[in-house]
Every structure is written in C-alpha cells, then in structure tokens.
Length: 234
Image (cartoon, rainbow, N blue to C red; front, side, top):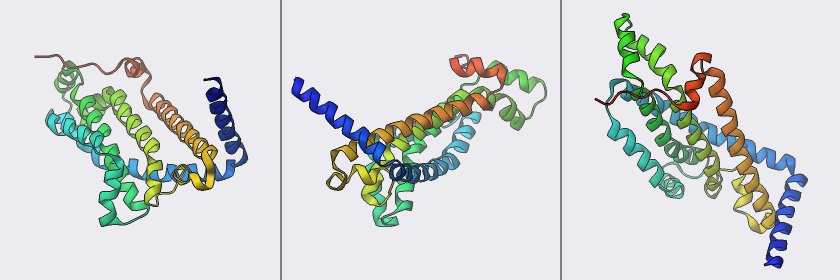
C-alpha cells in the first residue's frame, strides 16, 4: 500500500513537472479547446435559449424540454462524433456540432423551467399595469429567471469544456491531443493535460458565476442565490 501511494505521488509530481516544463504548449492547446467549446456553446445558445424562453413564456412544451435534456445526457459524445463523421468528416465542424448537441439539453431545460416557473402573481401584476407580453417577458420573466438561465449555461459550458478532449480522436485538437497520445507524452503528460482540463472547467464555471452576479440587478441578487420564485400550484 505504501509503495503504491509513493508511486501515485511520484506520478502526480511528474504531471506537475510536465505542466511547469510546457506552459506555452499547454496554453496553446487550452486555447484551441476553448475555441471549440465556445463555438459549440454559441450554437447551442442560439438554438436552445430562445426556444426554451418561448416555451416557458407560453407555458407549453415541458415534454420537449425534458426530452431534450434526457436525450442530450443519454447520447455518448463518442457516438455523436462518430455519427457526424459520415456527414461532416473529421475536424472542427464535426466536433463543434457534436458538442453543441450535448450542450442543448441543459440550456433548453433550464431556460424553460426558469421562465415557466416565474411567480404567476408577479406576471399578473405586470399585466394589470398594462404591460404587453414582450414587456412582461423582458422586464419581469427574464430578470426573475436569470438564476436558472445561468445555471443551464454553466452546466452546459462545463460539460462541453470537460468533454471536448474526446474530440481529439476526430481531429478536434485541444488538450485532448495530449491525453489520447500517451505514447508521445507519457503518463505524466496525459495526467498533466487532464489536470489542465479540470482547471479550465473550474475557471469557466467561476467566470460564468461572476458574469451572472454582474448582470443580475442588485435587488435580485438574493433571489439569484436562493432560486427564482416558483409559481403557485393550482
């Protein structure tokens, strides 16, 4: 047991040494991974966010939102990448589309739940003041649903960044190029790149949490921690 622990500590030390010896190389690979992840997340946002908000605003489509979340979680990333190989080939576009599909579920589900779950009393009060549907959406529903909207974004972003290394098997680049190539970079390189992926995922999470705090009105920041008010059950 002691010998095994010493071996593990030695391997971990070698991984840290690899990071220290190749900061520029790993930074370049990390930027490649962020580029791929950002493109995939952007596509998922363009498709899923407006759809989730619209369905939540009209209080319809809960089955579609839940189904999208289940499908997104159930489909392995490798299967998606392999499926798109026949259509899009090897490279950036194939991996971007596969990761975008992976990110769609959390964004769609949380945007739907966030808008659909806004307190009905607040909506009715706004309607009683003469607000139009669009004004209610912009000034009442979206601000109150900010916590869940950002929760979906954070889950999707961290999932995509942490999964992106798999894309290296289909020419996606990034830190996955090191992780899948133990023959060239040894175990120290594989573990070192994996540590970088974990650090990158944590940084993305913290950055999005900071963005949420920055864009949330001061009066709603307490709500953003506790979650949005839920509609009364009839």
